[in-house]
Length: 230
Image (cartoon, rainbow, N blue to C red; front, side):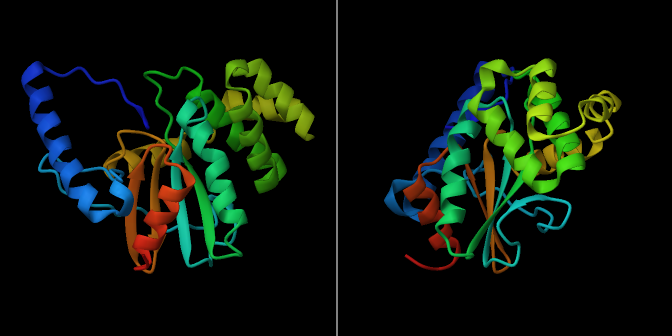
């Protein structure tokens, strides 16, 4: 399941949305194997058009971006479903023999997760000092210890990973990476992301989204579908 944004809607709009979701469910049960209902849909029940920027050097990447398939995940460090899918995406890349890569982009749901943006800022400040290795190690620690999320804990982790904590704290306080986080979040929202995790599978010019912490087999089925394999 995805972690959803909180929305205030009237009963009549709720009925319309429910109808759209049902239509989308019918569509995706036939489109995806194994009865998956995974991709965002519009009000008419059609696949939401997706056009995200190409994965690049400024992204946090696990695996090589020259891989035939890249999973671009929009995630929230405080989202329990994001913690759940994190290990699954890592496994997929590790087992792919270089055929699949993973990009992490930010999608903090501030209305329900007070520590989402602070953690995202902290992760960027870790990456500034310790590079990609530091970023991914920070992510692993935060997802494994979501109940500990706080400014003090981020500083503790920074020190444990080998960062200069004075420099780290100054970076976090400056919010110098806020625009990057905002850009990622806006892109997710503009492309149909209404909750986390929201992932777009990119391959051969195709971009296919899915929402929620799908299990391993279903994500692999989406990847095969994007590649035109069954």
